[in-house]
Length: 193
Image (tube, rainbow, N blue to C red):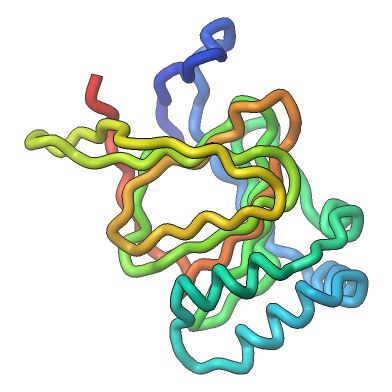
């Protein structure tokens, strides 16, 4: 999907960003290598594989908050895209999708929701900014809050939440997302000017 996004505060000197998402599923070999080098990530996938239901956000928050990620091993298996943020799909089944999403400085998602899915994510490295939106009578999105999340913090979004996740810093950003069930639909919103 592509489209023109408005300029972000503090990045006015950059040209308008074109929204492009790169999907990069890990191979079985990459996943096996990563899980062998990152015990807590292996335990998370075993827990997720062992339940036959949609885990709640409180459960995901508790699990993600306690993870100790081997960042070097993770970075060896994932990548960044110069065209837009990259979704490195670690594992996916009918109940969940585990994705390491990577942003270079200035990259962001469009304003969106997660129709049919909840999402919780751990900031692995970098600083993640979440802006929460509501819509006006015309269906245009306006910001109601924003928050910066540091490494080790968890952000959770319920199905009806409308938000944008961005890397407003000058360093790369990695977030570890769990979508329950896997993200299959979402709606993008135009900003109210």
